Amino acid sequence: MKRLANIILGSSLLLSGCTMAPKYARPSLPVPDAWPESAISTPAPAEVPAPNELPWRDYFTDTKLRSVIELALSNNRDLRVAALHVQKAQALFRIQRAELTPSVGVMADGQKYRLPEKMTSDGVAQIVEQYSVNVGTLSWELDLFGRVRSLKDKALNQYLATDQARNAAQISLVAAVANTYLTLAADRENLALAKSTLEAQRTSCDLILSSRDAGIASDLDLRQAQSQVDAARVDMARYTGFVAANENALDLLVGVHVEPDMLPGALGDVGEMKAISAGLHSEILLRRPDIMAAEYQLKGANANIGAARAAFFPRISLTAGLGTMSPELSGLFDSGTRTWSFTPQIVAPLFAGGSLLANLKAAKVDRDIAVAQYEKAIQSAFREVSDSLVFRTTLMDQEDAQRSLVGALDESYRLSEARYKEGIDGYLGVLVNQRALYAAQRGFVSVRLARVINQVEIYKVFGGGA
Image: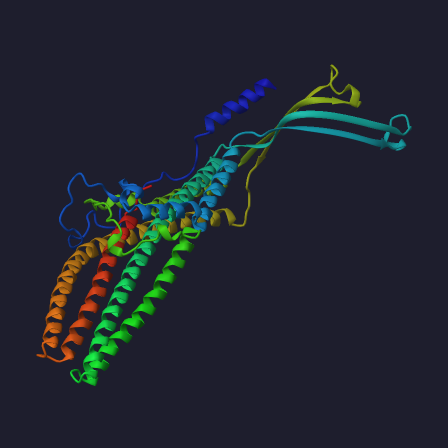
């Protein structure tokens, strides 16, 4: 029995590395090697890190924002589900891996039955007892053609793909929290702007009302001033609703209520993010978690072809045991009761109605589908990165232009108000410049929000950092 065990173990070690899966080769990049020229602005200094080399805690410099992200990573339910999927995939891989080694168990058996008179040699009925205890392995498959190992490789790659999917979910969560936080900050700044505008408009309206009563200003001037007050009231109500909705969205993302002292003030109060480099080669995309997950899925589909090919060949399974057997329970472990068994089994397919060929074809089609999905993931990532890099440059130009516009309109409003007070021009000029300035100020908040959200998007589309 010892010799038999050694033979089995030696065969297992000898054949443990054999599979019939095709040799895996990573598909070539289905995108250009470099980013489009329109997406490349001034080259970053050499010391500036790539996005996936910079942990998010270093990228987001604002203390409050970092605290909110930490809270979300601990409490977000979607991320929790993704982590549980990883645990499940890991358990399934361990189950499949266990098929490579024999499972040893103990089996105890007892029988007691009556033999009728016609079944005995002396014509007298007998009571027969038989007891046994065996230690051994049941139906362990010798993986001669790599079927079990291919299935193990498939389960391993499925586990690794699930783990990368969790990483991708974490990066998406970090980006979503940051975007919602920044949007809340912008809406709070717009709300403060609407409030200050409303207060200024009410002051102007009160002055015009006094001037009208004194016979200096006209009813038209009063109605025009009142329209500005009402417009500011509308914006106050609108941005109050936006702020409340964004706070609710942030609570949902974080998974718990975010305390008021953790919320942002104005957008201008949120710290800028660290500078990052886009790099020069598109191979950086291969480190994105979603693309890595797609490649692991491809590797798993490739391994599954090996299992489908091995199904054409015989399966050899072994059942072996060593134990004792006795006609009496009390004498089960006495001398002379030792027993052993060895039962090899070979199952070879002869006719399967074409199901084995169809299964192999399906496995190859699954591999081709995985290749297409992998290439599509890279193409989508390339477009996302290119768009984000293009917008980074244009949004910076927009912000500079919008800042200059606000300054010019502020001066124009100041001059038109002075001319109105001197009686040179009517109130219409003040009204037009006031509306233009208020719209430009809100536009400046929107452009700044778009720029910082673009920074978050760049960090996300490059795969971020842990």
